Image 1 (cartoon, rainbow, N blue to C red):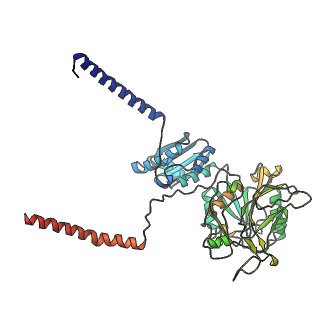
Image 2 (cartoon, rainbow, N blue to C red):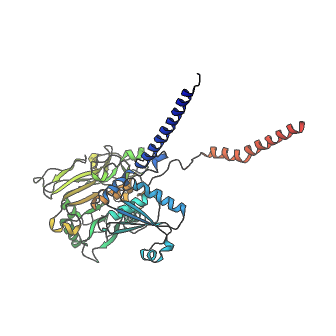
Length: 476
């Protein structure tokens, strides 16, 4: 093509137009990047993305201010900013402020700040301190400040019950500590020493007493239930130790024997008295709950109307809501064993098989029942349950003990039960996010080969290569 002054001018104009358009497009993209943000988390397990439970909790909160007492350490402040930024993307009115503790020593002492990088979380007049930088810890702290007032979980004591502060295998110390992490205060109460259940009790826990309660103690518990109190009753396949009037008041009948579940044995559990639950009834406690839960030495139960002529039968092992018009209760079984299980009334040794002739009962069997009714108006405000009274009865108390709390989803289920009973349905357990790609698991043979390779093979190869180069240079 012949270049003329006219074509040369056209080419120059085209270049100028291209540069102007290019700069304009880049400027437009830069402006759009300030208005719209797109992020992709490619890490294994999406550990840099805020979990769905955390996002749900943020929707329940109003304005939140987080003050980070951190020195001028760029690395520490960056970690704090990156963690809080995950929450700010879902909650714009969550504010983060940095304060150098060296510049405000009096304020630091007044607040009790002891760690460099400690976070002070403020919401609706409530304050929480956080010393661990993780999503699980921060979400739990937000859950604690979200609770409207203190939640007091009172454990009945004085009759050999499982101790909420005990370290023995059968005690509930580990579970009680998890409750306190979630903002619930665990207290022990002996009705013999203090014959009154405090009005501030959010949930009363009866954890498998081993000796009989006095009639007066049983009446106090019945009055507590009658007045609208929330109750968690953990039972074991033993005598009720004086609590039969409470069972009759709630319309609960326990199935004799210990539940045997062949499914648990197929999954590697050697002891016959262990039951597994893999599918759950449609109830808020187990909504979106997918983990297996394990129950050692459980007993089945049936929930019926106190007066058959006054209401419909309410126990069908399907988890469907049923009503007891005699007591005003509505009930649902949320823990049900498999169809292959049964209640064994004989000895749990040798060859064990279902024998209906000896009183064994075929599954499925209810081992967890939740009851609700409209709370008595006279006591609703005092008990902290303005609209609904809630009760949970389980056929096993071992699943929350120190020994078995870590099995499957036992811990998460136990926390969900207490949150539901305390009317904190939205404050569900926040699972810890783990990265599946941070550990390399090698067999013994692979480890041996890698060790020998690094110790002998690689050095010998380097030595041979060096000798070969030296010989070639010598021949020149």
